[in-house]
Image 1 (cartoon, rainbow, N blue to C red):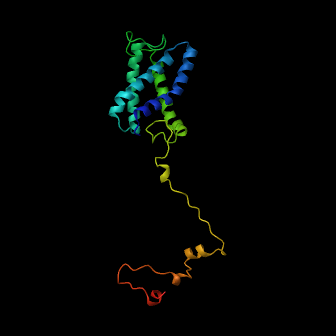
Image 2 (cartoon, rainbow, N blue to C red; image 1 turned 120 degrees about the vertical axis):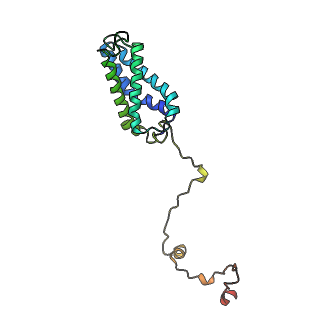
Image 3 (tube, rainbow, N blue to C red; image 1 turned 180 degrees about the vertical axis):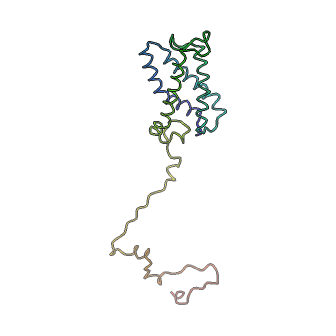
Length: 201
């Protein structure tokens, strides 16, 4: 896939809808905004990477690179969560207490579940929403033909006429009764002379 900058942002926005819904439910159930704020940080971080680093360094994205980028984004997001502390305890352990604490499993699990949901959305749902999504570099847009209307070919419908009408059908069938009555064109060279009986007509 060769995504454009707009395609990357649109795809990331669409694929993070399910993780955002999941994080919203968890935030409401636990009365802790850390879940949904983490998804917000994840989205903003991803858009920043899409418009800066990825746009300039990744021209073609093979499937294996997706997992490599997931690990890179996980490390960056984990550092941001440790610094920004989006939720209150027990959502994450503050950086001053430990580099990786006992409560850090929550943002870690949230990230990998969100990443799995995003990729599942990209592989299963996006091709159903837009058949030309991959060909359009990840963009959602209305695709039309690039041929001007005056160059469109006109459909030809074949219609066989009844045998009584006969003239056109006989011409295409090889039955040429009147071929001897056709006055030949002037020959291009003197090699092929017009027969005498045709010349007199």
